[in-house]
Amino acid sequence: MKVFHGVDELRAAAGTHLGHSDWHTITQDQIDAFAATTGDHQWIHVDTEKAAAGPFGSTIAHGFLTLSLLPMLTWQVYKVEGVSAGLNYGANKLRFPSPVPVGSKVRAGVELLEVAPIALGYQVATRVTIEREGGDKPACVVDMLSVVVP
Image 1 (cartoon, rainbow, N blue to C red):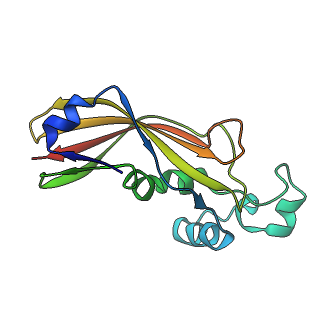
Image 2 (spheres, rainbow, N blue to C red; image 1 turned 90 degrees about the vertical axis):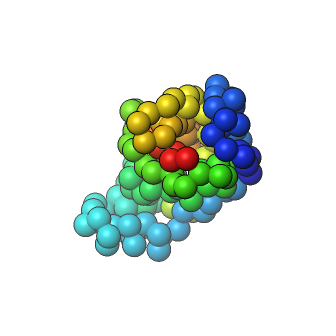
Image 3 (tube, rainbow, N blue to C red; image 1 turned 180 degrees about the vertical axis):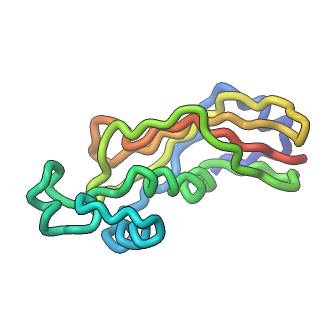
């Protein structure tokens, strides 16, 4: 875990790779709960028998389930102390280059792209790459934006 003591330290680290999260195992219970929450019950996610005969040999996590792991995973990589709030602002680019079969282990690598002053505080741009253990392509690559309020 990289700890920044204030925005000045964060700004000084722009352009660097901050590290990786711990590995997280994707379970069928997690996939089913995501399907129930979002209403996305496509067979490739929730029908284990049909998915076993499908193109990936098992169920796969929803792409947006993989994306939803970002807060949990990135908070393992870095934090900024001495600020009053951190807010999700959105994303500039999002891709899901490869599927995440049930039982896969995933982790996030975080690159700090830019920290720029804005009216509310500082806009923080990071590139988060979620990789699957043993995978040849990332599961998710996203340029995330957040706002740090001093």
